[in-house]
Image 1 (cartoon, one colour):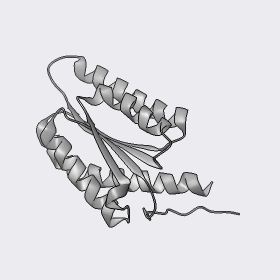
Image 2 (spheres, helix red, strand yellow):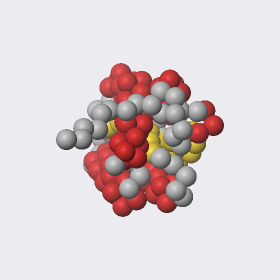
Image 3 (cartoon, helix red, strand yellow):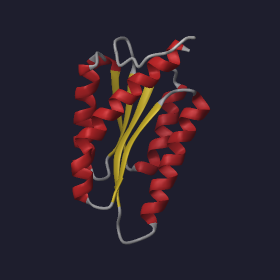
Length: 149
């Protein structure tokens, strides 16, 4: 029986990050934690590409272009969708998540989704550092898992 173990060694991996500029304080916190974790896990600084988009709905399109470029072993989506007073929160949350899932399923390039969906700013602030670091771990683990298959 072959068992594939968790591998969080980022050495040699090329990682692309798409950051939504909406809710910039949260985005900056996510990005800071994500970059720090990628570097800690061995991803070289020059192997990380960061691109920004206006909001979460634009994220899947840029992820798709990055995935199709064949330059990246894994991608990471960062941003925050914070509930407002209208139904728009559900539309943006659901459609961005659907688009991100489609990118990885259609291209075979792993995408770690760390676009927070929270009720308020306090929830987003409480989660941004943890989720940014976890996104880096997920991207590396899944890239290595796909490589090992």
